[in-house]
Image 1 (tube, rainbow, N blue to C red):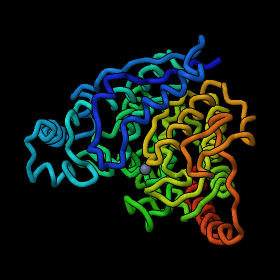
Image 2: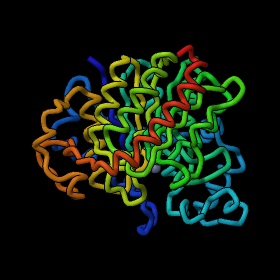
Image 3: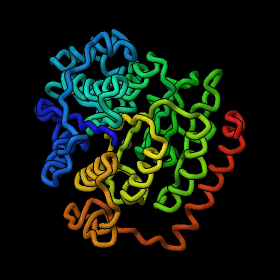
Length: 376
Ligand SMILES: [Zn+2]
């Protein structure tokens, strides 16, 4: 029986992005509340643990001193053009009260999860307040200030672990991909909406890493309108064989929920059944999993997807509620009954015709250019 920890602190509730900003820190709390009300946080193999803020010395493993200084002073009201040149105080990454403390605590939660896996105290650790995959060493971007994902991978790699970083957020996991672009001890796989149609504009399939890292960065761009069956098709064709060949010691999993149908910032057409299927695949490798939240701007759908993820992490999902569920992405409603799973979405022929050729092209490219590096 695997041990699952849910990482959360009520301290996180003190911080909020500005009200007009799409990133809502309330999501983690709502996941906690739903899981509490459904009894999914209690049991011998499940627990809720509270993190501590990550210390500056840890943050410096990835971020520059200059950047951390600018972030801290900007959060105190001393903001200047040098900070703005690093993205701090931009429209996407505004300055808000307690910004530095929030970012350090959310990052501390992800790092705490990594530590729990390393010590064997958990087999699965889930931090719904994490997943800031766009931040660079000296750059705030895409609602992200401190890159907890890159830091967690660095900390696990320091302990000699081979890491499979999987990113299903609808946006390219650029900050993490480029952090390990020349390394083979962290394989990054990002599935995302085609960057020609979405922020951050990077992550086409021909970005495959360089030097030692060639073949260890995998990008899977997806056309607008990508639906469950197409997504699973490419996941099974590309991601599963690569995981098998790479044989990681640990998974780091960015579970952004903005690829779900109805997300206001993106254009994919998935239901949360895709996430369920992916998590079941990951669990089948029987390796520790550090999972985080990420994007997800339809709050109700995001909260339900993460609640579903947790139920699968701890073996409580039966998959049986699928056909009884009401609401979800189908009705673009935050109300639902009968479980966390979305109902299946119908796929039109024109949608298939728009999506499948692009999926086939990407599968072919990766099979020709990445698979041989791994003996596939
Ligand atoms: Zn995103």
